[in-house]
Image (cartoon, rainbow, N blue to C red; front, side, top):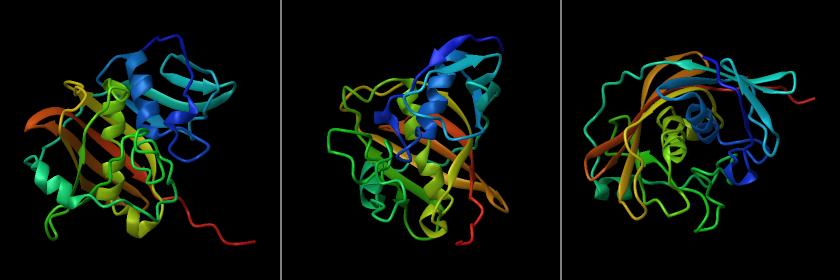
Length: 226
């Protein structure tokens, strides 16, 4: 896959304070590469730095930031939660280590970020969901990749684990929603292997499927205090 381009991610689209939201970075890479594509993040994507996209690799100078290649996204999807269910389920994560995340950050201004705050649907079903109403400044396929990002971490229990970081994301965007559409995004865990956890996510508008994704999340190794 030969793509030669430059990618620069603005600080607005951060996840952690010093690096990009993983879903946004993957969505921007996918836009350059063409979908469907799978992106593997090798290090946190830097902000405000021109990155080179070429031959399935994204680099910052000599440092490898990400790799990407064609990949189908095959998922068995749950029934879409209703709008009222998603509104009832949402739980802003006030203890998040990434309070300024473009997708799920609780310290973003009301007119900044997506404000997607997934919480459990029902009792013990393993599904998390949240409502999302796009604004005119939160449109496009790369923003759908964002919406399909963080709910996977919450489905994998990020609130109990403390921190999960995105390792790999493959998404299929069928349609980007229009401003004001009442959307519902959901996530569910697919598998777990030690510190690696797989999740599926999907986005609907009034029952219409807009996009879906499969992600691998990584629980960082614990570090001992000096």
